Length: 408
Image 1 (tube, one colour):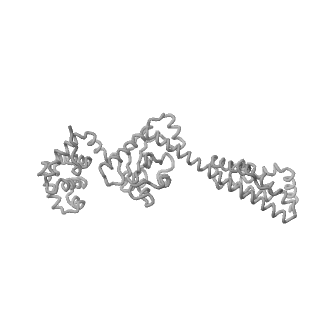
Image 2 (image 1 turned 60 degrees about the vertical axis):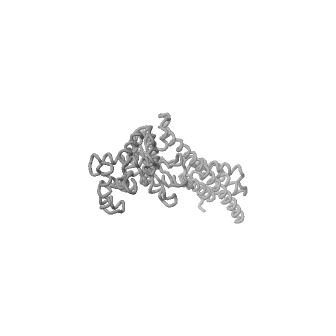
Image 3 (image 1 turned 180 degrees about the vertical axis):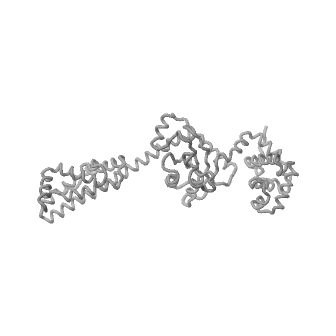
């Protein structure tokens, strides 16, 4: 051993406090973690090497608190563990008790005692770290859930809301839209669905200004309008946020029957609450109309909102325009289905026939029969508007399966 190294170690032995401090600083540089997280760990190692003393419960409790402190400071678990292992390695290399001893049995006993402290301390550090991370996650989830509730309700103090949204990266000055996802069955693990949904949305839209939470048994996604409609088109590029949500939730582990509705984008502090109300109303409308579509945008249902807002008028319209169809052989059902398909295919008889699984001649006959019974010609532009409104009203009222409500 070089004489300079011998002198350094003798000096370290004469000044254990300074020596341990130097070891801690070097380990801190190795791991990229604060040396303060070592606490009384190095003196514990040194004492174990010289006396064989195992750490007391109070010593380990202090290490567990240091693990929690590391988590709260944002130090990764890997760096915290590396700090402790690096400190142990460096301490053992320069341990005066080992350097001075020529007794191999004493060295082995010291090594066993040091490893015992390392084993218990690192395990306790990791346990404290994990506990703190769980607490932080629960706290963040609670804060996020409260923030989402207040954003969707739209009646909280604006200044406080802006401050609370800032840690989540939500800029309330931007325009946002809300997507709601209703499961076909109760999820066994809602948090797993949220985590998976967050991962795919963050990957697509980024991890800023996006919130994913639950409310009233629904998954809620709040996203900036410009990001939600950006990127590669999916399913024709329409309602991109809704299709993104539905595609992830349709994986087998979450069930196959998901209904997603998307509110329109609105700017400002209360835009999120407005978009949420639209998405919620659209979800109720989809259920009421029994629409068999996985993703629905609120603006696609605006006409139904108008129709249902004045129910006496729509009942009168359906009864007056479509009521005569009940006189047809087989009832109004087949003729009404033909009208729906005819309007959905852009008034193209061949496409209507394909959709219904009948011949073009059958479609032509039914359209002529509708004209005869109602007096409205589906091929006439003016008549077509009235027929189309009546068909939408019939769908909203689930007629003719249900009788028209009696209006006083």
